[in-house]
Image (spheres, rainbow, N blue to C red):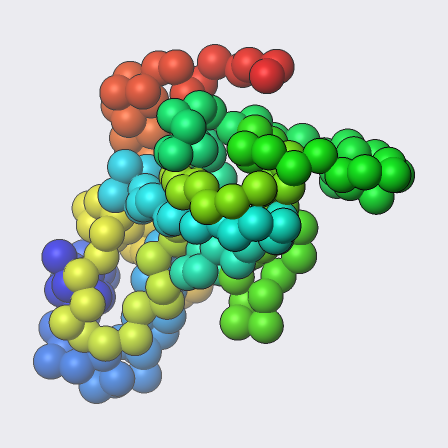
Length: 214
């Protein structure tokens, strides 16, 4: 469903006229803004299948810090793999990295086994440290859940479930209008639908809801 289609679905539910552009009326502008607000709320609530993607970092000898191009600063790191050696990599704290890289006489160089988020690039992307410091070329695969960019054009397609998005925007619009009588029911409908969809996706990947102390 496109950005404009979502806006019009919400307008119809509010008994308002549909529009041919996002900025056609002051009210369509408001609904378009609420779409982005609720979209981000939904995206932050779960690691949705539709938001998952894989980034790749190619190491070089002696360089331990790499930019995760396109990740921004709010993407969730799901898992990291050393694809060259076919091993899973594990997170370690900044303190652990300091102890192993800055408080020793000789820093270990080898195939990377651990990672840590450290800093943000000038373009606004997260940076990741690897340890041991790579002693050559390794392909590191980073699986992330990344929020869709802020919607700006009418033809952009929404990645998350558009029906859930419509219910959430409708709840915000009713609240903004001050129609208190209908707001709690619509908010509850939205929250229940959100919980149901999270439950469905969690069932697809039950191992992701099990805490592991690796």
